[in-house]
Image 1 (cartoon, one colour):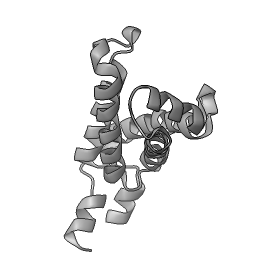
Image 2 (cartoon, rainbow, N blue to C red):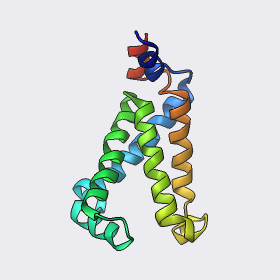
Image 3 (cartoon, rainbow, N blue to C red):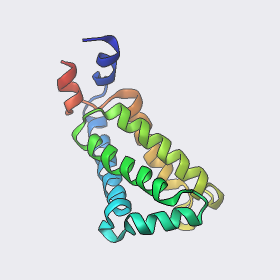
Length: 144
């Protein structure tokens, strides 16, 4: 197995990061499904696109598709632990955009639509990016 492929799938993490990865993945898959499909009270692509245009992220439909697609599919990847590092990289980028385009001006706390929750998810995503998927993951099975 080439070094690049081995590094992609290899994990140093244990069971704790496995739990973190799965829970963060569930949150992202749910948020992505709100944006893409309108599930869980979300606006679907049309509603999300309109909102994204309203905050200056244009073209709104493309931005909604990129954000929703990344959240949904990377969330699923985290849940099963397959290609967890690339998924975490995509989510890290998506979270940085969300923090700096929507939440930063509102301060830290969620009560004011601040970046508190996004920052916590960013920490989980970066942990997976650095450490890998953990003991219970398809990545670990592939690396062996």
